[in-house]
Amino acid sequence: SWSSVGITVQTVYALAESGTNIFAGTTAGVYLSANNGISWTCVKSQLSVTALTVSGTNIFAGTTAGVYLSTNNGANWIQTALNNQWIRAFAVSGTNIFAGSNSNGIYLSTNNGTSWNAVNNGLTSIYIGALAVSGSNIFAGTSNGGGVFLSTNNGSNWTAVNNGLLQKYVWSLAVSGTKLFAGTTGGGVYISSDNGSNWTSVSNGLPVQTINALAVSGTNIFAGTYPGVYLSTNNGTNWIIKNQGFNPSPQIWALLISNNYIYAGTTAQSVSRRSYSEIIGIKTISTEVPSGFSLKQNYPNPFNPVTNLEFGISDLGFVSLKVYDVLGKEVATLVNEKQSPGTYQVEFDAGSLTSGVYFYRLTSGNFTDTKRMMLVK
Image (cartoon, rainbow, N blue to C red; front, side, top):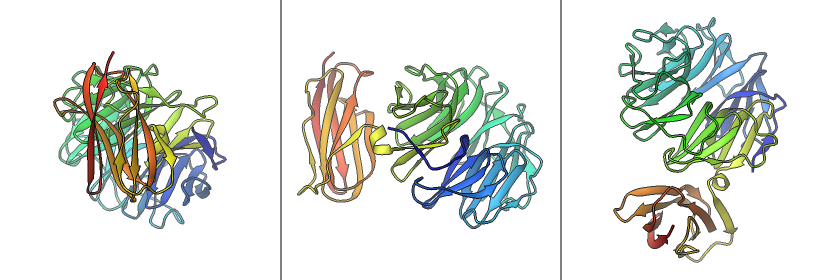
């Protein structure tokens, strides 16, 4: 379940990681944790920080008074030349840093913040709620009903890409492979598989329609809402509430997945943390090192619609556990991360799938095993 970790400031708007360090942007400045959120140190006070990003060894903080930069893990900060704008979002593309403002569009720096230039050609909506990078494409989510804009030339020109998005207020964007997700105000989550040209609503099981934050790891999509956090393991087809431990469930402003934890920046409950393995349904049965890798038959089998899959890992390494239909199409990713040696159990909910035969495959290092299971509804 979620547990609050050591920042006394109650509202946290932004989270970012740099190596083993985690930074939190709060209403009272920037905080740093070097031990996975167990303890925090204020490294820049007297600022209201609404965005954070990392580029190499540089940490950028977007504030109500422009952009601040640290080149030494937060020990010292300087205010950059962009010093008179409220910065709501960042994106990094190579050596280019994009900053989205609350009322004057997008700014670009090619020299680590020494200078900034407005890059707003074609951008009819100037209230920027979110930025994201996918290859050479830069996406901007706008917050005054303008939807999403796309630039393919580092911000020199922008084009609205809103077919199916219905001019929503877009507060969050996330990229997962070739898919782009948009979190909106009042409209839930939308997905595009063609660089934003077309959008489809994917909010089944998501009763909360205002999405402040999105985070992606493999095929797992997390939505930070008011109130609480939701998870989809199938690209938004279905959503599961993940608010255990919150009391009450807070408004979520930021999400970060780092070092097998997921962190949430909240209103009123500071930073909360949860085991990533636990939140996606992986239970540790034993930490005793098995003699070898193994994948057991699911139980119950046949099942409707929930079953359990158990596997053993004998060496530290990356583990993948995926489910496929009879045509070989991947329908769920249950595990997609580094795991320590031990025995684990994963719960698989096939509520969104049709009856039939499915296969699940475990891969780790040179080990691969596949087993068959039957869903009967």
